[in-house]
Length: 525
Ligand code: NOJ
Image 1 (cartoon, rainbow, N blue to C red):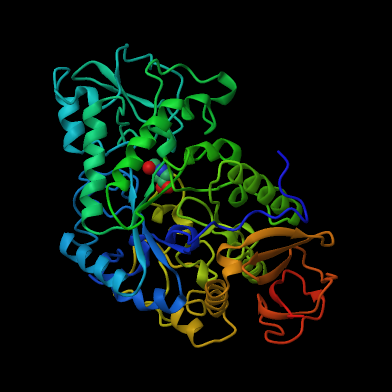
Image 2 (tube, rainbow, N blue to C red):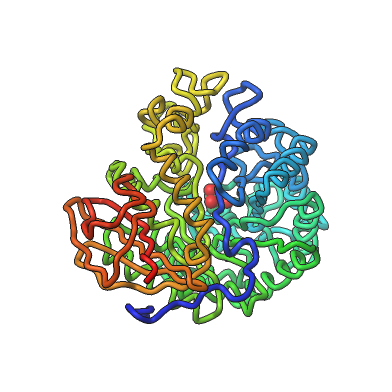
């Protein structure tokens, strides 16, 4: 697919955009954010205690990874009660207080909603499993067979074994695309749809502004559950993960959000890796509001790769009138600083890129501190998917406890004292200070938070573009190489933000340092 070329602008967001088009969303992994109860696991009161950090930083919305009761086989993505808070995180009262305090600071709150599967300890599944005659048998995907031959060749994520578990008592297999402790719901069952819609209403009534919908592309299933082509077994991108029926289900889900006032929004995890495959999940403005764009997160730190990923994304999404999203790090992948070789300069330049692209950026807690993944010794590992490193606790203070009352559930990331929030708040040259300047620059510039995007010719290894809205303009340039590069612009500009802090507020020299990103304000003529 060819994307916009230099001189071909991507249109600005029309009219007064809804909050989810102009927001910067900050993902919190509650277990690792901040611990108020002293059990070594982060909790809602811990989050509440650090809301000032988040509003000082300047993010607009928070997304919490799951906080529901769960046996934690998959760190809360195995929900055993959708309408409560796990005691490790707090309770509904604490939650209500958190919503109120987030709103009082002018921020929004999104929850993680896990529609594809539940915990095997969820009362729905316990009931379903109890007998073939259970009224909830049809809520999950049970199939006949013999104990030695699973019904198809699908593999489960994290175990690599069959996506089926044999239930001795009732003599059938149940489907689980993830762990055996995460049986898949059958969304073709009307009672499942209604029950999961009610879960949304429960939280929408409590005031949440929206949801991040976990692997939402998987909820539509072909009832025949056909084999995957042998060459695609174990991959994410298979035809049976991208079915027309899912769009019908998404329209039903969207209708529930639309019952509520106030621009409630859903960002979907549609893990199909390709913008062209993800774009249809926005429907005709009647399915997902936003969908994650994982393509750039999975690629190298390379100008050509990014140029084509941006073009591909913008071409696919603008064709259907959808608004892009950008993400560099989350709880499932190594942090971008780690992926980019540990270089602080690259992580800083990546922040310039992330926060100046057209679309809604998602930050992952701790990236504003320039954190790298923790080294987690085998005996400390918790996650069956090997994702502990990026889930390490956030260091708040330079002292050995780093603001955690007791030893946390995972080790701290490297250089935790120097990279702690308190140490960096006191240092105007820190990564944290850079994120804050970038967020402020983004907020005060219509061009940056909702303007059009046009690529600007640049030398090899450099990506440059212009953002423009209502007479407001910015030029952004990012040097992906470690050597300096000259960028000839046809106008004079002033440095608004530099990833290195170099020359801010002064005329731009025309040279980027190695691994430097800059936001430039054209001088009015
Ligand atoms: C995607 C989530 O991001 C991941 O953490 C989880 O393990 C799977 N979905 C299963 O819910």
